[in-house]
Length: 280
Ligand SMILES: C[C@](O)(C(=O)O)[C@H](CC(=O)O)C(=O)O
Ligand SMILES: [Mg+2]
Image (cartoon, rainbow, N blue to C red; front, top):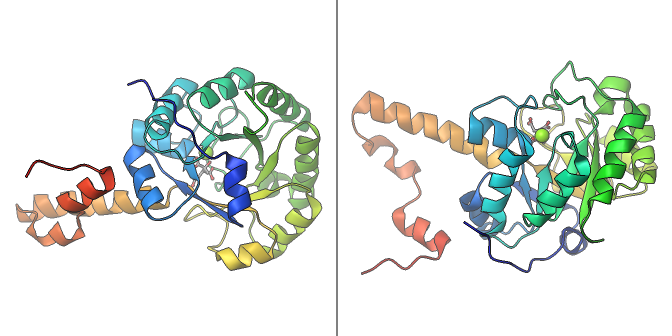
């Protein structure tokens, strides 16, 4: 399906309108409609989500630009909110990656400093590329921006590997190379977050992925610590996955779905979210 051109607020518009900006992870168009209904004004397509949910694979750098583009297009063709896309390490040609992701209707990307065979930022055993190599990635990504309002966020995974000060130094270098904003991955305390945001002269994103290294700080705590953006990359898909397993298991166990009907969205609720008027 070819997406119709949609006019949408830019990522910076969303950032100006809400502080900190809450960004909802949505793996498909319907999840994006649900996040919009709940009042979010910015969306996220998770690389882990594409790998885990669209392909049933771990988040280890197996999915490609094409795989991600399919899911980007599905979301942007249906929902006009600004979409931040996880482009992992940028693949072979970060300039082309940014051009393609922007052409698919996204408003922003984040590109990270792990080696191409990357893993979840909240796991032990991460390996980073040298700062110089990440600077080349960022310069290439920035050169692919179609216009000034497209945002390139540089993500550093360094805090867990090289320490907080090294992560701050990397972030400063990434900004000097042209990154617009910084994603500080897997920080463990509000003190660390505050140290990071006060040292880095750009909007900082904190990732509240569940079962990770960063505690579930409240929006108020993160605001006080100087955070500009708060990411919930997989919250709804984790909940949906647990609910799906429970429902499948109940149907197999009971031979009927009666015990789990009250866990389900109704047909009327579905049509309401879709804006669909069924025949009467
Ligand atoms: C944000 C992230 O990059 C993602 O792909 O959603 C992941 C999330 C996760 O694995 O929980 C990450 O933090 O590396
Ligand atoms: Mg990711």
